[in-house]
Length: 165
Image (cartoon, rainbow, N blue to C red; front, side, top):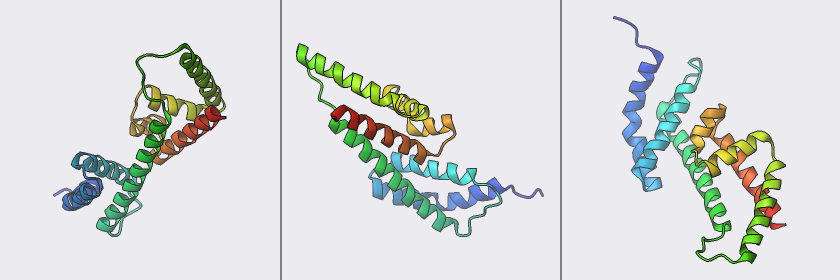
């Protein structure tokens, strides 16, 4: 009988904790779909670990990873909320003064964006202009999700500071 592979053993161990961890995430988030997405990202991280790094207590590891994922999720949601609050509400009738003001604001933002490192610019444009999910951007640039979040936060704060001053 062939020896089970590392991933096969890990898959079996993970499945024994899936319902429990997804339940924990669902209670914290209030959304089963988001909980499943977060759990999936936790598993992706676990499966990317080198086989030489074993996890002693898988259940404890999954709970800690779930808490970290929740923290990252809330931090990203807070950043998006702050940005949305800073953006003007859409208006049907726009005056020439508003158009001029918007053009000036856009020029300030474009100038601020050009001051950022190229990778940070690309991440912001992919996410805010093209609507690409942070996870996909992380995969595209082979970065951790937290790195993408940091680039976005840095870019948004920089652009907001420049457009205000």
